[in-house]
Image: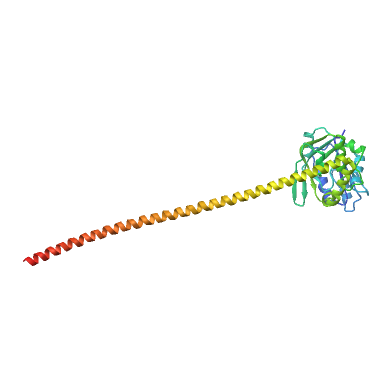
Length: 320
């Protein structure tokens, strides 16, 4: 049995489809099925697929009722044991991804890896945890759909709910979580996911559908518990913010005091230098004064000697 079926959904996204197709075609591991469901594009996408060097195993270009209706068409046509949904514009990170997945494979109902999230020239790599709690799903933290391998029988039994435009895949995560299906993380970065689709740009609808799914799948008691956890989490985060603000204020106060102490040290140093300069100047002038005193004394002695000679000469003169 084929291990993987890659399902690519496209509608009038010629450039994005090219990137996706190239990343699929360059895989060193080629033992997979590839299905392309096009929604009747008029931008040359259909012609591109028909002429592409790596032919998909199944291809149809016809009008559909939206992205999840197109995915359900791909699910119905798939023969692989696991499904990977790689929509046009999203692509595998390099040519060895599927081989790395095989090398790190662990059997589970849902096997997920890591992903790059891209917006324009910016990208962020998300490394997912080994386990997602129900509360993680409640706060809209889940694995990336394009980095997740889903056991095909789960979706063939019940496909995506086309009543939702954005979160039908998310609804299945919750159902499988509540049913006790097995989830497993593998340490492989699988795809680059473009943040330009409706789920990333229409956040209001995203949150509305998310809340609708939670009310549909959770019992009133469980829904209330999730809300209560949210309140506790909000209170705890507020306590942490206040603590961090207080710590920041204390750090600023300590920094201010440290600066004052540094300024005092500088002032004391300046005063010490001033005292030293005065001491040196005093010593200098003291030395100068002593030398001057010695000179005066010497001159005095000379004067006294000369006076004595003159007096002696005068005395001799007067006595002769």
